[in-house]
Image 1 (tube, rainbow, N blue to C red):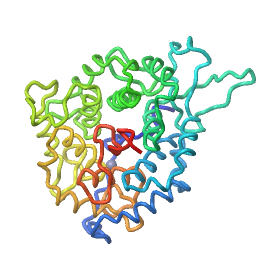
Image 2: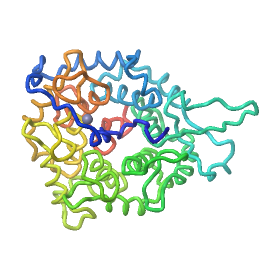
Image 3: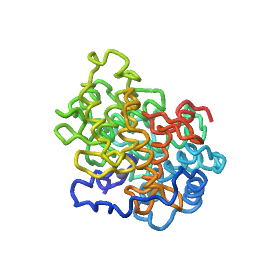
Image 4: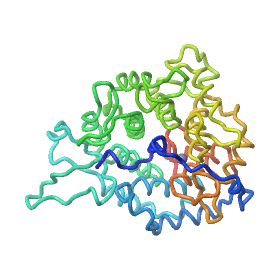
Length: 376
Ligand SMILES: [Zn+2]
């Protein structure tokens, strides 16, 4: 079950298995020639008040959808639409707690459930037999709490961090849930972001995680989701952002002595730059159509490296506007319906482009600088 869960870093991984519908040229026109902030705020307010039924199948990832909505409103400088105290109480109600400290080493992960669906009630003896605490849900829970200004030093971080080590594998990668699932860079990133936000690295063996990440850099400079896989925009983001959060690479790496870096920076920069396609958008892999979300996944890597200045910003801006919906939100491809995932990464992309009216982005955490710094 958990293996098929969608999560914030599930950036179209399944794409490679299916033939994709290529957007038709006739769809390459936008009814709105500018970033329409007010419509986007209305779109997210709708999501905040009542999620449309199309998202029923993603109920298990309720916290992820909430993260996109609330962090999106923060990017749009509209956090006043959110009842911060109520949101914090709601998020905290998803945390799994052990019955005693002795349970922290029983192999389970005491993080956050993704939704009520996986939060089964205790049995007649008051014992919670089923714990589906998930790394991606935990990343989203902490990220939402930071967005609403909740003081993370007051939560039971001991349970999260000590039990999180149960998920790290001998090769340094992470499983997202203790019952078993795929291990790859997405969950290394979640673990690094969780430790960073909690300001405590007891949750992981950083050296092992670093070795795993470095093994994922491919011959062409990008990173695959696991060692040996094709370079991928999402995998590359998880690798570079994790190394940054763990302190293994500096910000604006290109202005420093890149040759002494733990990763091959010139090759990585070259791979990222080649992902900007002729239509101005970014693709996740070679020979794929441009897709809104990769303007963040690749753009954020370039921002961390100090190479964002090299992209064609005008062309990217133009492409993104062709994915902007007249109802607010962004779609994956031009001329298709918007969804909350691509809307959120559309907002982060416009923040990287320094669109007026948007809060600046903390590239490595994927949220506003203000939330990352705890200034709400
Ligand atoms: Zn996408």
